[in-house]
Image (cartoon, rainbow, N blue to C red; front, side):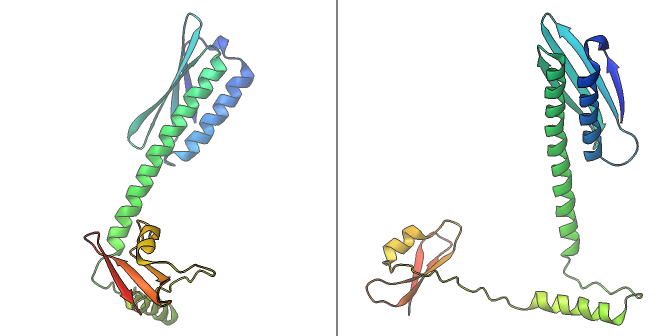
Length: 192
């Protein structure tokens, strides 16, 4: 990464400056891998307050990290930390968007033809994978050992908001019961 400084550099001692440049090198690895990255660092001070501003162009954006402190090394560390947060946020957005786009492409309803160069075992594996995807799936109910019997009202209170059903043993009859949440928010009870 090419680092360009603007401002009075004599206040920036060599050891903290080297640490700062290593941090910027790590940030450049997180950015796009195309070409050489360039960082522009602006050093300013007002009275007793030192300010550092870092600008990097990546992901078609100008990413700016700013930091201010009484110590120039601390201001540079703050600016690098702010820049790192922005880089991570932009990179995650970009990655999630790419994954979502890929998911839309792979979930097309028409079957895709196998390439002509695939071997017979590879074609069989691909067919087996598509037939497995079209089969109905069975979800097994996890039985909790030592779960106490409860009434229908207690079961409604125990049901988590994300779960659509709950199986429990009825305390009055001793039978297994299933409580379903309907789309309108009400419940259906099936007793065995």
